[in-house]
Length: 498
Length: 142
Image (tube, rainbow over all chains, first blue to last red; front, side):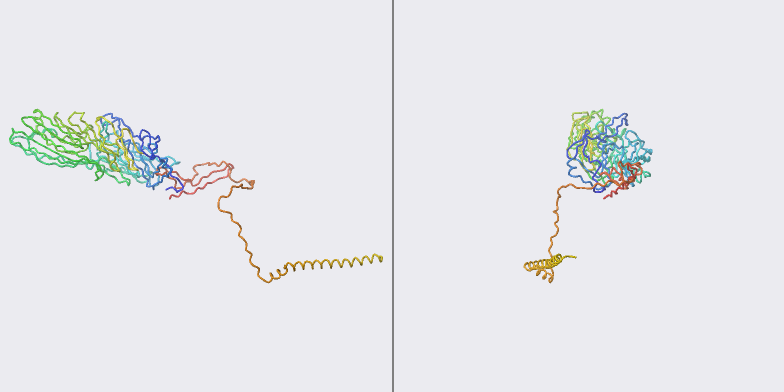
């Protein structure tokens, strides 16, 4: 480091910025530019106003491998904190109060360069079946008094290697501390007014080595779709044909116009990689949503065609947020349903519990409805991203992630309850559960939303679960400090560590 | 020719001169000898010639006490510069920035993001046109 007679210099101002005010370690405050993100006004459904609640709180560390710096007693008293690493804050990577719109790479000659890839922006839908060549520029940075310099290069993103069809969107989601690599999240958009969900389809890592004048730039898929979205196969129920009645399937998701006898147990585990995070040493770690469920179902064959029909199913499981193999948060759910059909009509009774919220009720299904959906597919649980589908007296709905859901609704008008569980991004590094429940279809009064303490690269954040009944807001913001490991979440206005 | 009277006066003067010199000196010498005999000086001198004289103890010069010295005015003598055409005259101006040389090492910000090059050599000139070169030490990292 510098000779001992040279005092530390640079910027000693660090802390949490909210509303353009920085709170220093000594409790003092000072005006400070609020880290921001880029905004865009186009999206997959036409014009979508950007709700960058999670991009405000983005933080990446830039660590050049320098020894720790000591802050004097006078520094501490004045709120100054000298650090041996920098923090890039917000979606525009703000440093020293100025947005870089790129990250810092230090080449083998010691030169500092801001790396910019303008084509990686969220408003552009990209075909996942074609490669994409993008410009990568190196802009000289940080060397005071030298002439400016810019090196223009490019790299080809192997989007087809992700193994998906259709289109997706790109964002830089993680930056290696030494600036030699960055991870691109290739995702499908799932934006609501409360939440900017970005369910990943796959991940590409862009790596840099060598001098800025002649660098080696590579882009490789580090997680393809099959590695990112792991779902159990849809297991066909074991069917025993009942004499005299044929199985009629006009829509696998909705119709089971057949009388059949089912007995069985179904267990499944699925997981979805929500993000890839670098640690301080530059190794990648997976942030995972995992769902595990076991369900049983029984629909014994009636003694005769005119006899009543009783079926039942039950299931239970857990949803976990993990970093690699470590579970940092876990919630439970359970459901039980019975259906009795007699004389053409049917009665469904259900009970469920989702993260401690009890749901229960019953409903009567008229014969006409029963004609279409005479016997419920005995609800079995197939966990998938964004929710645990709780099958209640009907077929499990599709695995598509819809902006408003997914939630399970039995296919008749007599729906009983719905519950959905989403990963909620307070920031790209602050992710927790959002659990919504409704006891009875279209019963807004029973709606509840719970936000559990989130997981960060430093572990589970502190604080208590937020429990609200507001259907349209607020939006929650958060931020993680890569230097200290501190985190805030559940804030109602943008907040970011610098 | 001197008269008899003059001759007789000369003989008397001569006799007086001879008697006065002999008498005064003898009387003074006798008197000094008596003094020395009474004070023992001659004896002391005789003894000292016989023995090795004792070393005389001499005290060391006084050393001023450690500590602040009271303020005092210094004084210097102004020596006007020699009447020549060399030396450094103000202002000192750098004519060409590109002539600066920098050390490969420099000063880094605490977070390693910024780098301040350290000057190695600056070439300038004084108001009298004389070249002035500044050579700086290398900031050696620790």
